[in-house]
Length: 112
Image (cartoon, rainbow, N blue to C red; front, top):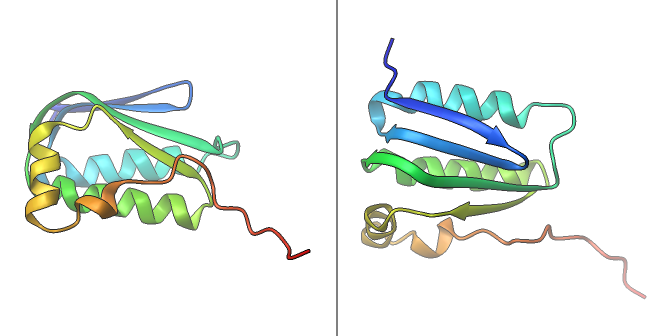
């Protein structure tokens, strides 16, 4: 079992630690799916990368996946402490604008 990754929930923040790479993607996806399936999932979610030690290009796909899931669940999502190399990869692939998420949920308001 690879122990180079761990995530913990602190309040409404999911703190990612260790390697964020292809080898750890199955576990990361399982952990975040379990977090997202909780009955009382907060309306505002934050994913903190302050303790991430290693990044590869699969992390960009992960950010986009999390953004889609937040939209599907109608939750606001924010990424905190994105590593510079992850931002650079997103820019290289032309998705840097797509990894930014709205801080507030989009509400459909009826026309007056």
